[in-house]
Image (cartoon, rainbow, N blue to C red; front, side, top):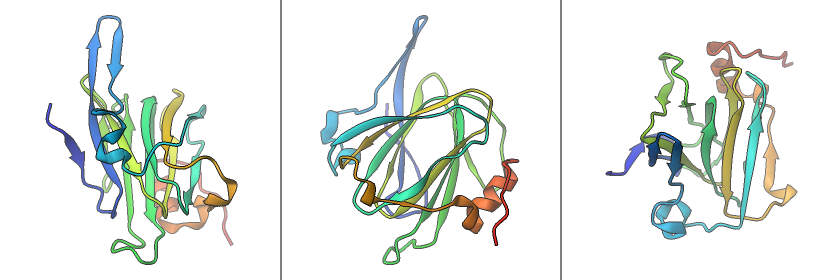
Length: 184
Protein backbone atom coordinates (compact mmCIF):
# COMPACT_ATOMS: atom_id res chain seq x y z
CA UNK A 1 0.00 0.00 0.00
CA UNK A 2 1.41 3.38 -0.96
CA UNK A 3 1.70 5.83 1.90
CA UNK A 4 -1.23 8.25 2.01
CA UNK A 5 -0.68 11.61 3.70
CA UNK A 6 -3.34 14.23 4.46
CA UNK A 7 -2.23 17.84 3.90
CA UNK A 8 -2.87 19.97 7.00
CA UNK A 9 -1.49 23.31 5.85
CA UNK A 10 0.37 23.68 9.19
CA UNK A 11 4.15 23.40 9.04
CA UNK A 12 5.23 20.07 10.59
CA UNK A 13 1.69 18.82 11.36
CA UNK A 14 1.44 15.61 9.35
CA UNK A 15 -1.27 12.96 9.10
CA UNK A 16 -0.52 9.59 7.53
CA UNK A 17 -2.98 6.78 6.88
CA UNK A 18 -1.49 3.48 8.07
CA UNK A 19 -2.67 0.06 7.00
CA UNK A 20 -4.93 -2.27 8.92
CA UNK A 21 -4.97 -6.02 8.33
CA UNK A 22 -8.55 -7.14 9.07
CA UNK A 23 -10.00 -10.61 9.38
CA UNK A 24 -13.11 -12.15 10.93
CA UNK A 25 -11.63 -11.84 14.46
CA UNK A 26 -10.81 -8.11 14.28
CA UNK A 27 -7.83 -6.20 12.98
CA UNK A 28 -4.09 -5.67 13.31
CA UNK A 29 -3.13 -1.99 13.16
CA UNK A 30 0.39 -1.17 12.04
CA UNK A 31 1.48 1.87 14.09
CA UNK A 32 5.16 2.10 13.18
CA UNK A 33 5.66 0.81 9.64
CA UNK A 34 9.38 0.28 9.21
CA UNK A 35 9.94 0.64 12.96
CA UNK A 36 10.83 3.73 14.93
CA UNK A 37 13.32 4.77 12.23
CA UNK A 38 10.35 5.97 10.14
CA UNK A 39 10.47 9.73 9.54
CA UNK A 40 7.33 10.23 11.63
CA UNK A 41 9.39 9.18 14.67
CA UNK A 42 12.53 11.18 13.79
CA UNK A 43 12.31 13.06 17.11
CA UNK A 44 12.61 9.80 19.06
CA UNK A 45 10.35 7.84 21.40
CA UNK A 46 10.71 8.42 25.14
CA UNK A 47 7.13 8.01 26.40
CA UNK A 48 3.89 6.31 25.40
CA UNK A 49 0.45 6.85 26.87
CA UNK A 50 -3.26 6.59 26.20
CA UNK A 51 -5.82 9.38 26.38
CA UNK A 52 -9.40 8.25 26.92
CA UNK A 53 -12.40 10.53 26.47
CA UNK A 54 -15.53 9.01 27.94
CA UNK A 55 -18.20 11.56 27.07
CA UNK A 56 -19.53 13.21 23.93
CA UNK A 57 -18.13 16.75 23.51
CA UNK A 58 -15.82 16.48 26.55
CA UNK A 59 -12.52 18.03 25.49
CA UNK A 60 -9.20 16.25 25.99
CA UNK A 61 -5.70 17.71 25.60
CA UNK A 62 -5.97 21.50 25.08
CA UNK A 63 -2.28 22.31 25.22
CA UNK A 64 0.95 22.67 23.28
CA UNK A 65 4.53 21.68 24.09
CA UNK A 66 7.87 23.49 24.24
CA UNK A 67 9.98 20.36 23.49
CA UNK A 68 7.74 17.34 23.03
CA UNK A 69 6.70 16.03 19.61
CA UNK A 70 3.76 13.60 19.71
CA UNK A 71 2.47 10.92 17.36
CA UNK A 72 -1.24 10.24 17.93
CA UNK A 73 -3.40 7.31 16.86
CA UNK A 74 -7.20 7.27 17.30
CA UNK A 75 -7.97 3.65 18.19
CA UNK A 76 -11.66 3.80 19.07
CA UNK A 77 -14.53 6.20 18.58
CA UNK A 78 -14.85 9.30 16.43
CA UNK A 79 -13.45 12.69 17.37
CA UNK A 80 -12.97 16.21 16.11
CA UNK A 81 -9.25 16.96 16.33
CA UNK A 82 -8.23 20.62 16.14
CA UNK A 83 -4.78 22.19 15.88
CA UNK A 84 -3.47 25.76 15.96
CA UNK A 85 0.08 26.83 15.19
CA UNK A 86 1.18 28.85 18.25
CA UNK A 87 4.77 29.31 17.00
CA UNK A 88 5.59 32.93 16.27
CA UNK A 89 8.53 31.98 14.02
CA UNK A 90 6.59 29.47 11.90
CA UNK A 91 5.60 30.06 8.26
CA UNK A 92 2.10 28.96 9.29
CA UNK A 93 1.88 30.89 12.60
CA UNK A 94 -1.73 31.32 13.69
CA UNK A 95 -3.10 28.80 11.17
CA UNK A 96 -5.77 26.34 12.33
CA UNK A 97 -6.53 22.86 10.99
CA UNK A 98 -9.37 20.55 12.01
CA UNK A 99 -10.18 16.99 11.01
CA UNK A 100 -12.75 14.42 12.04
CA UNK A 101 -11.17 11.01 12.51
CA UNK A 102 -12.93 7.88 13.57
CA UNK A 103 -14.97 4.82 12.93
CA UNK A 104 -18.39 6.45 12.57
CA UNK A 105 -19.43 8.31 9.45
CA UNK A 106 -20.83 11.63 10.68
CA UNK A 107 -21.16 13.09 7.20
CA UNK A 108 -19.43 16.16 5.84
CA UNK A 109 -19.10 19.48 7.61
CA UNK A 110 -18.25 22.64 5.67
CA UNK A 111 -14.69 23.79 6.27
CA UNK A 112 -13.56 20.64 8.12
CA UNK A 113 -11.69 17.73 6.59
CA UNK A 114 -13.32 14.44 7.44
CA UNK A 115 -11.87 10.98 7.21
CA UNK A 116 -13.96 8.01 8.23
CA UNK A 117 -11.59 5.19 9.04
CA UNK A 118 -12.38 2.10 7.03
CA UNK A 119 -11.24 -1.47 7.52
CA UNK A 120 -7.98 -1.00 5.63
CA UNK A 121 -6.41 2.09 7.25
CA UNK A 122 -6.22 4.34 10.27
CA UNK A 123 -4.67 7.72 10.95
CA UNK A 124 -1.40 8.62 12.62
CA UNK A 125 -0.54 12.25 13.08
CA UNK A 126 2.59 14.04 14.20
CA UNK A 127 2.08 17.16 16.30
CA UNK A 128 5.26 19.27 16.40
CA UNK A 129 6.31 21.48 19.29
CA UNK A 130 4.37 24.72 19.50
CA UNK A 131 1.20 23.35 17.88
CA UNK A 132 -1.88 23.46 20.12
CA UNK A 133 -3.94 20.27 19.99
CA UNK A 134 -7.30 19.23 21.37
CA UNK A 135 -9.99 16.67 20.60
CA UNK A 136 -13.68 16.22 21.32
CA UNK A 137 -15.62 12.93 20.97
CA UNK A 138 -18.50 13.41 18.52
CA UNK A 139 -20.57 10.36 19.49
CA UNK A 140 -21.47 8.62 22.75
CA UNK A 141 -18.77 6.02 22.06
CA UNK A 142 -15.57 6.29 24.09
CA UNK A 143 -12.60 7.71 22.18
CA UNK A 144 -9.25 6.10 22.90
CA UNK A 145 -6.10 7.68 21.51
CA UNK A 146 -2.54 6.46 21.93
CA UNK A 147 0.30 8.96 21.96
CA UNK A 148 3.96 8.21 21.37
CA UNK A 149 6.02 11.09 22.74
CA UNK A 150 9.55 12.24 21.97
CA UNK A 151 10.12 13.37 25.58
CA UNK A 152 9.42 11.96 29.03
CA UNK A 153 6.57 13.73 30.85
CA UNK A 154 7.58 17.06 32.36
CA UNK A 155 4.90 19.45 33.58
CA UNK A 156 6.97 22.49 32.52
CA UNK A 157 6.80 21.35 28.87
CA UNK A 158 3.02 21.84 28.73
CA UNK A 159 1.28 25.15 27.95
CA UNK A 160 -2.41 24.74 28.72
CA UNK A 161 -4.74 27.14 26.96
CA UNK A 162 -8.50 27.17 27.58
CA UNK A 163 -9.96 26.40 24.16
CA UNK A 164 -12.82 28.79 24.91
CA UNK A 165 -10.29 31.64 24.66
CA UNK A 166 -9.22 30.69 21.11
CA UNK A 167 -11.72 32.12 18.58
CA UNK A 168 -11.07 29.38 15.97
CA UNK A 169 -11.76 26.64 18.54
CA UNK A 170 -14.98 28.32 19.67
CA UNK A 171 -16.12 28.55 16.04
CA UNK A 172 -15.37 24.84 15.45
CA UNK A 173 -17.17 23.89 18.66
CA UNK A 174 -20.29 25.76 17.57
CA UNK A 175 -20.27 24.04 14.16
CA UNK A 176 -20.27 20.64 15.89
CA UNK A 177 -22.79 21.53 18.61
CA UNK A 178 -20.16 21.49 21.37
CA UNK A 179 -21.18 23.77 24.25
CA UNK A 180 -19.16 26.99 24.32
CA UNK A 181 -18.52 28.71 27.65
CA UNK A 182 -18.67 32.41 28.46
CA UNK A 183 -15.40 34.27 27.99
CA UNK A 184 -14.89 37.83 29.18
